[in-house]
Amino acid sequence: MSQKLNWIKEFDKPLAIAGPCSAESEKQMMEIAEQLNKDYVQVFRAGIWKPRTKPNCFEGVGAIGLNWLKKVKDEFGFKIATEVANASHVKLALEYDVDYLWIGARSTVNPFTVQEIAEALRDTKKVVLVKNPVNPDLELWMGAIERLQQQNIQNLGAIHRGFSTYKKTKYRNNPQWQIALDFMNKMPEIPMVCDPSHICGNREGIFDVSQQAYNFEYDGLMIESHHQPDEAWSDAKQQITPDRLLEILRKIELRKSDDEDAFYHSKINHLRNEIDETDQGILETIAQRMKIASQIGELKKEHNVAVFQPDRWKQIKDNSVQQGEKLGLSEEFIDKLVRAIHQESISHQNQIMNKENSN
Ligand SMILES: O=C(O)C(=O)C[C@]1(C(=O)O)C=C[C@@H](O)C=C1
Image (cartoon, rainbow, N blue to C red; front, side, top):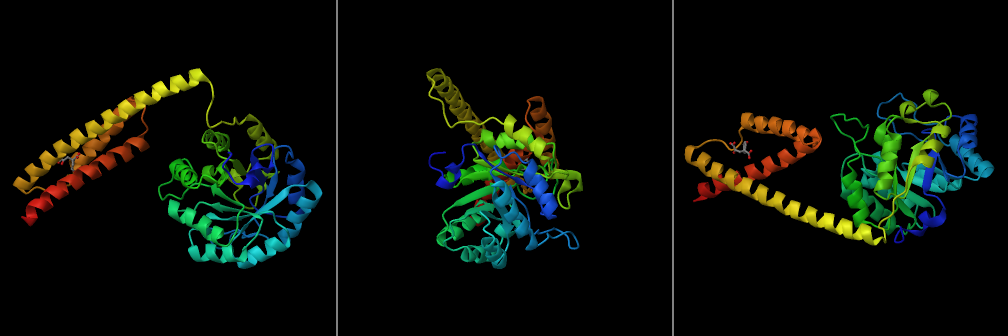
């Protein structure tokens, strides 16, 4: 936490940004603001301009909603936040003294858009948060932060909202935690906020994803909250009531980076040694497997047989998934692991084939 940018240290509790997916009416905004617990929620969010997948959907109330946001700020003392997707949104949001502006996942993918927003925000002291791009591209996410830094914008943060997939998983947007963890490693000063609403796409998973984020020492949460979630004009399935939100925020456990306790240290060091030895064994086993694959490669070359053998590959994959299940390893993990091993194996065999060809 200590090396993080100062803006995140302003609050005595972890950052919680909450409020409706979309501003719908002044009454809706005031009712939600009234119901959100001020001890746990510091920032009130509402979408004013909504980028929607399909045309003819509700695309946000537009600038009028900024009046309602401003009223929430004045009457309830929340800081206020909204999404901006172009320079005119930025201009209006600044006019209405919006405190936190975020760049949405569909904007982060486009460097022209990010550049336009960054230039419109030049020198601002407002907090600017960048959602991960919809596609799993760490460089694009970091590149957006760099564009903002180049415009002398210093109060920056990132929002992890998960990544689109063609094959639907239990998540609306697959978290792919490793990408966010890599981001935190490469930009340790940038606070990381998790958006479990967009990761889950439903109400049920929000606690687990939020807790997982805190298990990784994230700095805050952005959770969509509506006084009548079923009636919401956008993303109804993933919004939760202010009461449920409070329950979640109270229940979540925070984690620290380390513990001074001597017993903890000796125990974890011992276990980490065991991990190192096990990893060494895994690598030796994989290297041994590659030697066998190379022998198969030589044999195939002699007999003019193709490297890729779809039936055998399928058999290996199915067997591994079955074995993995017995060992408590997920199908998703086994699938990735055997694919990586197979890819390395066929690349060894290709080298053998090509080397002999060029002689
Ligand atoms: O069984 C083979 O033919 C191999 O070359 C081994 C192997 C593997 O590494 O598992 C590699 C390539 C084939 O597509 C199938 C399997």
